[in-house]
Image (cartoon, rainbow, N blue to C red; front, side, top):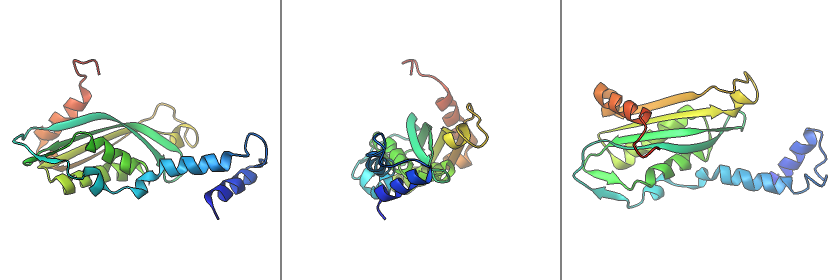
Length: 188
C-alpha cells in the first residue's frame, strides 16, 4: 500500500470523504510532508561531517547553542520542537561549525524520542570528532503533551547527554550549563 493510499484510508477511518474538494490532494501532501519530516533516515552522519575536520591548536570549549529542533514523536507521530545546545572540547581537531546543526537536523528528521535524539547527537560527535568530551542538552515542547493526553501547554522536557570531560569533570559540565543559560551581548 502506498503512503497516499494509507492516508486516504486514514481519512476514511476518521469519517471523512477523501474525495471531498478540500481533501482530494491531502494524501499526496501528507506523503510529501512525511517524507521531508523523516528525511534523516536517508542521510549519513559520515557524509554530513565529510572532510570538515580541521587541525587546530585550540583546546577550549566550542559551543553552538539555540539550534532549532523539530521532530516527530515516535509514539504519536506528533511534533516536538525546541532548542539543542551542543558543546565539545577539541582534541587537536575542530569540525566546521555548520556540521553540528546539520547533525541535529539529521537525527531530528526521524521518528524520535527526545532522549534517544540527545544521545545520538552526542555519540556521533564523540565517534566522528573524537573530542575530549561532548555535552548535549535539548529543551523541547511535545505536542503529545500539549494537544492531547495531560494537555499541559507550558511543559518543557529537558534531556542531556554528557560524555568524556563533560561527565567526569564537574567544572566543565558547570561551565557548559552556565554558558547555555547566559545571554550574549549581541542580544541573542
